[in-house]
Image (cartoon, rainbow, N blue to C red; front, top):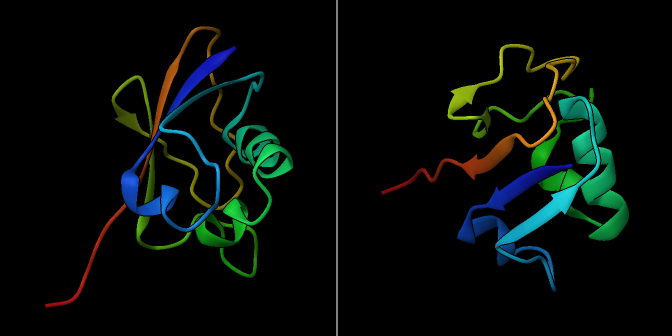
Length: 91
């Protein structure tokens, strides 16, 4: 299991999405798939049309940004902490 912390601006977009959730996933791709299964509509805010992480979304595993934003093949060690953050832009 990995513990996932989700930024407040993303929680406003998906009803019932908690601040923190535990998910069974071994890769970043599987993590997003599992989150989508429990919270339909979330992946549309995280992934682009090609299934890559959107430009303004970051995933941090144990405080390190994932390297593979396209395939999301980064491994998630058991007990990892994952932060999902969406950068805000505008003026």
